[in-house]
Length: 567
Image (spheres, rainbow, N blue to C red):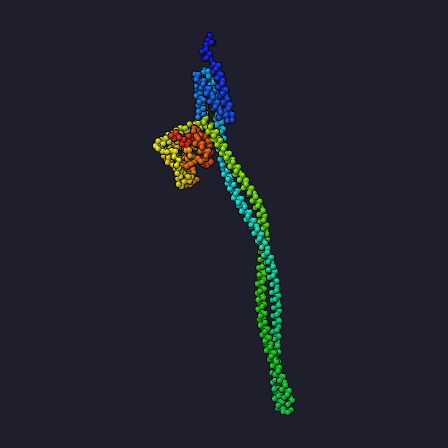
């Protein structure tokens, strides 16, 4: 009888309808798990859970409380934040204990898979951000290489032109030097011939002077002889005179002797006169010979001076010819070397042209690589944002997410109070602050905001990264950072390198279009990678900030990869 009691049957186990439902539910959950493991399936799996939730809603309307609890779990899993942290709780001995165990086992496995998937994508995200950073640096290096290669090409082209011009001028100088060398050699030969002729003239003049000396000696001898003749004529005249006197005394007997004496006197007078004439001529000749001797001596001296001067000139010409020959040899070597250099430089110019072309191609390839790395980073960040919407119930990321939500609430309360006081936090009329580098900007709301929010931000950023959080700061939809960490909130020093780190506030810090769009599109939780000054890659978790129901920006926190188990 008891076996036929429907109450006993109901207490002993689920009805066939319930069993079929449980089997259907398990199959749906397993299908969802299979889709989750498939590529891109994690986007489809929640749809399966939605379907299960709709079915459970229909079943719950039939008065099944356990299914109602399961429906609440699935609703949480299909919320804005996909909550997979809770297990299905049933009373001991419940007919749904097996279903709860299967669901909880599946949920645990699903959480483990999502955690592994999340961790793998964190590694991928970090690698893609680092790859994007390296691609950016490589692209900058490629651009610099392109600029340098262009300068090298320009210098090579100028060098090739200069070398060619120098080679041409060197060849012209070598040719000119060869002609000058031939002229110098010819002049040296002519000087040698002139020196030889002057030496011959000097020799002739020496012989001529010897002849003149002999003439002078002969003139002296003639003068001596003429002196004797004159003396002889004078004595003869005296003797003839004495003879004539004696003949006159003798009278008639001496008449014939007197005639002879007169003839002798007449002859002596003629001889004396002729001797005087000869002596006068010899004197004139001696004077002429003396003048000739003096002129000859002057000519000999001048010939000697000319010979010495020509000898010195000839010696200098010889040295000059030797220098010309040496210079000509050097110029020929230089000309040959320049021709070889011109050929080599032409080859180098061809290589520099090839390097420039390769640099241009590398620059284009690096820009393409950078664009792809940028796209990969953005795609990875989108996946990370989707994964951040899963709540698994444990892990450092969820702790940071909960902390960020609390801080978001505290900051929004401050911003709402400022709005109540009439501060227009959406004022976008920014004014550049003079003499700041990097450039700072001010707006009407920045002063009140900093005064109200900076103490809270100082408290949030006091750990200096010891808890894995590098910073926690608000950024508006324009990418403007009104406040900074305490160590980055110093007054400007005027040194751009120092101010970029130590005075990093009131600046448009986010300028990348994709990052700006991520800030503006954030409605619940955003997640991605960010590069800090010093090329430090970190993860950034951000949540939206609203003022008067209007999207203002985000509150973001930088997380070191090690804090999330990524190295």
